[in-house]
Image 1 (cartoon, one colour):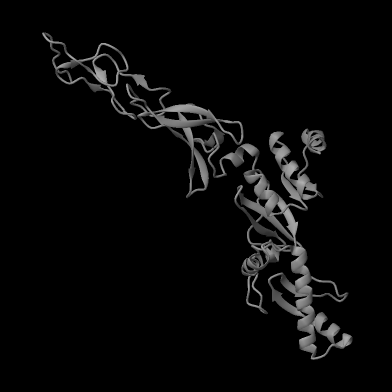
Image 2 (cartoon, helix red, strand yellow):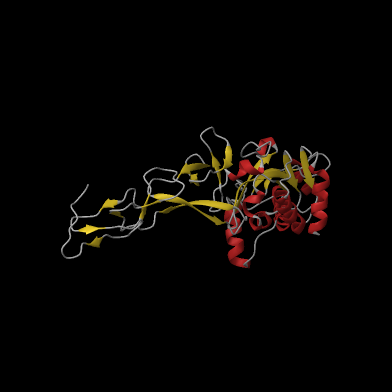
Length: 324
């Protein structure tokens, strides 16, 4: 249960391990990742045995940098020398035919049949001794990886360590980080802290960003968190002149967000990172949102109140000279 998961993490929180290994099923995998974020549990690396793309997507960016173990995924960068297909190409055909996702168990069974068929063809016989000799000598590249066998007849295609590099509720991108001869990229180790991840994750809901010294912090009032698609980082940027900081709760994380909004009519802000928009003074007005300064009332008009959208026409028998 979630309570048991929380108890396990709380017991380890005072002295968290370098490597947290969870031999769990899918539901527990999801709960562990969610509770780690709630408790800000910080291990150097987290490895979950049964996490799949579906579980990673359910918890979105919370799963980023988690490592899973699997012999096969549809996004693996393999190319079959037998069928000239990639895992992605095979998976697309499979989904259209069966309206379901291919699993590594099914793929393993299919590749066993393929290896057996290739050995029979190479032996030009169904004799078990001849076929066995071909299997022992086999070295072929498939969409399941390289297929070969050791002197004991055991397959030499190891499980792959995959690390979540990007994740959202729509997609989780995993890259092979182990073993070294199959690695697509180096493992991210140690994992960034939960605060640091806020500045490394693209998304709508975040109040964190890198400040001028490069530290990931909660943005100050008058600033907003903006994602930079070039550097792949979030930055705290000051609200520009003509705007003010507005605060609202993020529905996904319960955080307070800093959002820059245009000054309303009757108000203006001249400087960036202004705490609020100033009311237009007497004799001035702002008839549009986002003003950086209030305009002087034109000749024949005046305003004796603060924060007005327009000036009042002078009554008969009176006048107001224009002042710039």
